[in-house]
Image 1: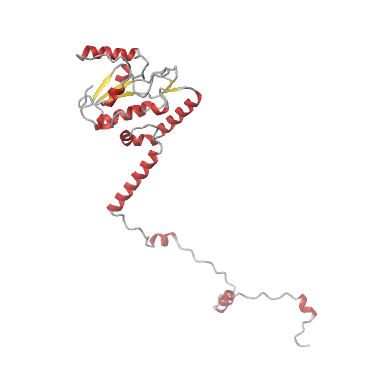
Image 2 (image 1 turned 90 degrees about the horizontal axis):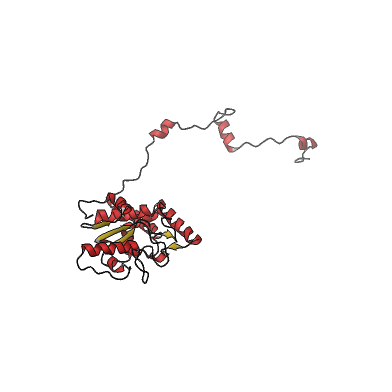
Length: 262
C-alpha cells in the first residue's frame, strides 16, 4: 500500500539532516572543506585605538584627596584610646593606625588580663586632658610611671593625694626652692595644678606592671611619646624642655635647642 514502509526500512539508518549552515556551505561551493575561524593578530589588537577616560579635573582630584583624608581620619578615630584629649587627638591622629600602636594596645590589653597595670586605663592619658596641645609652655620628661598602688595617674613625677611625694619629686621641690625665690613646698605630690597651667608632665613609657619598674619598656610607648615630642618641637615656639636625668636627656636629643629652651 502507498505510504506503508517495508520491513527493511526499519533496519536502514535514517540519513542525518543537514543543518542550514551546512546547506549554505555546500551551496557556496565549499562543501567538504574545513572552515576555521579567523584569529586576530596581536598587531591588529595593538593598532586598534584604545578608549581612555578623560583626565580628572583639579577639582575632582582635590575632592578625591579630601575624601581619602576624611576616610583615614574616621579609621584612625576608631583606634583612639580611652580618655584622650580632643586637641591632642587631632595632633596625633596618624599614630593610632600605625602597626606599632596596634601591637602596643594589644600588649597592654593582654597585660591587664594577667596582672595589675598602672595607671588604670582612664588615667593613662591624663596629660592630654589638662590643657590644649597648643597651650603647652613647659615639657618635663620622665621615664616610666610609679609602680606602687595609688601613685601613678598619668602625669610624670606626680602622685595622687594622700600619697606622700616620692624621693624623685622631693628632689624636684628642693631644686625649685633653690632656684625660685618664694617657692613653697605644697605638702603633697599632686602636680595637676602645674599641668593645667601648661606644664606637660610626660613619661617616655606610659604604663608599668605593678611592682616591676621598666616592665613595659621597648613595647612601643617610646615611639609614641617621641611622636608627641616631635609634634611639639615642630609646631610650638618658645617651648621650654626640662630634661632631668640621663634618660630624659637622651630622649631630648632631637629637640631643636636653638628655637626652644632646654
